[in-house]
Amino acid sequence: MERFTKSMDGWADWGRVFQDTEAFSPLAEEIFRRHGLPFAGLSRCAPGSNAVFRAGGFVVKIFAPLQSGVDTREDFAVERFAMKRAQALGVPVPAVRGEGCIQDRYAFNYLILDHIAGISFGAGRAAWTAQEKERYAACLRGAVDKMDTPCPPFRKADPAARERARARWGAFPRRFQAQREALLAQAGQTEPVFVHLDLNPDNLIAGEDGQLYLLDFADANVGAADVELAPLAELFRFEQPFLAGYFGQYDRRELTEKFVRALLMHDYGYNIIRDSLCAPQELKQVGDLYDRVGEALDKGGV
Image 1 (cartoon, rainbow, N blue to C red):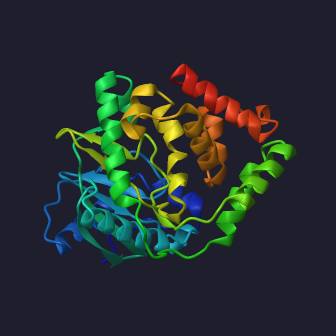
Image 2 (cartoon, rainbow, N blue to C red):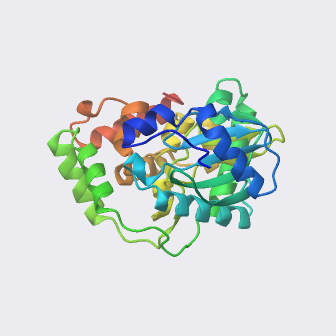
């Protein structure tokens, strides 16, 4: 008996159904039954690219099948590996309570995680006191120090993704692009470590227990440790309490250098600059990015 009855032929079909609690409830109920977990019905979570629902004290993440037109099998393998690695290292993450693949009308990979009661970093940021901001930033630094350690490669190289990242940088003036490529070519090689790469305001939860939890490891990879700083431009908005909690006492020039280098290295640096600093067209050369980051640090926020 098929529990998932919707037909799918491409990403548009997946986009119409991936938040549909009614469509996924029979499938999710069977997944929970197989793992001996109580099923309390589905409610929506923040939308992403996969089907993510809350079910009582759990969250179930059902990955898009091949018929969606996107192959998410590696995303599933990466997230499963990264979550278990983080948990073993003592990084605050939701515990993995179940995993696998259920063959129904389509083959669906899935994860069952503990639901973390709390609020997202983005939702809490506006209400937190300076002391709370400093404390949460220090919690994040502690988690990153445990997590971003040497790690063997765990995902395949994706030339198409690299080309898409390169295309995004095409929105900048040509002089900026040329200087960026020259700087990256000159950068010294460092020992690759595990990097989350997407520490954005929606992927951090301030739990009711006072802990800060990391979510969504789908973009995780191995790379230079400093690249992890790029999303912090969006996360911290260069506010001094966050910076003090994460970096301790810092030199403004050195921190500017770190942020600029991270933004230039990150595959989504274009998006972070656009959303957190300015329109790409305003940056005629890389020196302009140094100026923008320095100004944000001087003002204590953007």
